Structure formats: structure tokens, C-alpha cells
Image 1 (cartoon, one colour):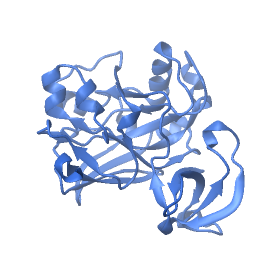
Image 2 (cartoon, rainbow, N blue to C red):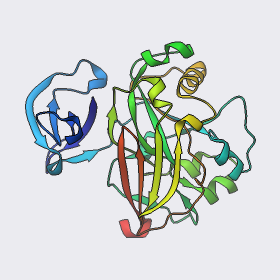
Image 3 (tube, rainbow, N blue to C red):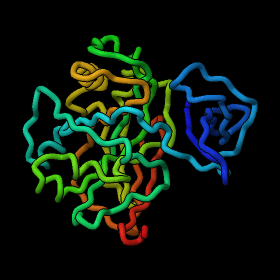
Length: 271
């Protein structure tokens, strides 16, 4: 099941279940409207349905609480950042105000000279949980989506901590929807491809993560209570330090989930 958050032209955000042509169903490339946020309870269809090409997809979840992110979780990326491979994962937070959806612009701040993409698998938590055992992680995951852990790399380095460099508005694109039918084992074998315009810059699989999906969720729940709608970013593959600039488009594609694309603009262009 693919859970989307979307809006019709001039309409309010709502939720729906997406059916694609590849599903061989009766309603290809449509979204069936549901009555409420699926994170809050069972999916109940209203009977309304819209073509995907007439709706605007939004970030599939706006975390009410937090975005927990794992750093240096791929050996190649740790090496290119000059970071040691640690037994205990590196953790940081991104504010929920950094979240945007598909096709919304990533804004390069005036303070930033080196803006980086970081294609990542994102985990969406489905229930309140604390100190989850590795074997029980599948019970607390609602689903998975694509993420871009946008980073002001120069500010991250100069600040000697990551809050500002990772936390600007628009620095956490999510989407295009949440896939709720993948098992934890399947999530640990997803190909991630990041493109800048038409150039492939990252191409790897989550099987090469240092810390697996189950170990990441278990660890994150060991020091803070996870709430429904919380998002966990699992880290980026090698070549995650490359620059992107205003006028370019960055896409993060994850096998079996979808593609998240965002243009990059300068902060002065937004005014």
C-alpha cells in the first residue's frame, strides 16, 4: 500500500492510497481518497478517486515530534567525510520545519556556499514505542519513503556540530508517498540512486549500510520515545558530499518505493 498526502488545485491537504500502472489494478495511476490520516487509525475509503496527474503530491508525513537522522552509516561516505566507523551510530536531529514534499524547491541559504544532496531511505514510525528489540522493529514501522538530507556542508564543518547545517527550512524533502508493504528484510535490500539533473551521482544499496534498518530503529528507541509519524533517516551512500546549485534538480529514487524530485533555488529568488 502506498499512502500519499496530496491536494487538489485550490483544495486542502488530504490522504489517499495510490495505485500505479505496475500494480495491474483496475485504476492505474490514481489516488483513492481516505477519510483521515492513516497513521491515526484504519484506512477508510471515501469512494472518491483522482488521477495522479491532476493532484499535487505533498510531503507524505509532517512529523509532529521529530526527525532522527543517522550519520556516517555507509563505509564509503564515512571515509569521504574523514569520519571513523563507530559501533554506536552517529545521531542528529532535523526540525520538522525542514520538511518539504515532491517538486517543492530546496532553498540555498545566503549563508551557504556548499550545498550538498544526500539521498536516503526514510523510516516512518507507526506507533508509540520505547526500547524496541531488534526482532520487534517490524511491529513499529508504518512504512518507508525517499528522503534527501540536504546539508549546508560548509556550515556543518565550520560550526563543528550539525544543527544549523542540517536544519534550514526545506532541508528535508520527503516523498513521493509512504510504502507500507515492505518488510524490514526488504527495506535492507533497496537500491538508492541520486541524480543531479540527468547525472547519476549516488548508486548503492541499503544492504551496504553499516547499521541495518532494525538496528537503527532499535537504537533510536533506546534513548527517546518514538511517536507515530516520527521519521528516521538512515544515512547516505558514498559521493554524498557533492554540490548542487540553484537551477539544478535533484532526484532520489529507491527501488520499490518511488522517486523524489526537487528543484534547487537561491534564497534571493524566493523573495
